[in-house]
Image: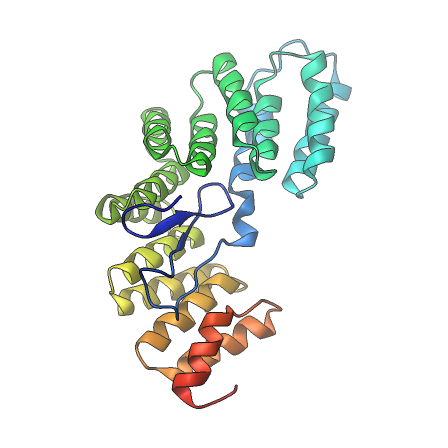
Length: 281
């Protein structure tokens, strides 16, 4: 589903990509595979063992099952994680942490409706829960319900005004709606709160790119790489920005870095770079 500014919903919750119909084909922006776990971070052990009361637990064995389920989800083994979390919920129907983690797994499996259902349950049990609101906002972003995503992030921030992920997620929702100015405000705040937030730099770089501020886009992609040296997507996007600036040597250098990291250079980027630089590599 495309919005009025040309962004479209990507396949991963809370992420966006660039529509080639509106913007130069040299820049191909796609989801960050390593950031698929944005939802999952919310369901890590802090949420499991600090934020939520484990009512009705039969003892350590139940907590071990919960921990095992969260670990599976964190590692991307969603079916195994869901199976373990099902066991926890069967024994303890009011375990908010299990609903939160299972909701994250469902979202990563491409089922935002199930994710939202579980996150609703987590919030019913534990209403003062910025992590669950932000996680549900990511699921709403995937469904294209950006107004609800914004509302959930805003609610999360009433409980924790310093929650960088809530600002970042709300910024993505604004960006999907085509409101780059509001998106930039939230990306700026996320970075202010967490100066090492690579994904926030990446997404702000994309916003600058769409505003045609190539120098600032390159600066933000560079900061993303500084904080995450294996950030293939940031190298891809910086290569595209260098290409648009006609700085072909630097663009090629980033292409080579993508290859050295075992990543895939975006085909349209590579095709255009070869054409305009007169080089094959």
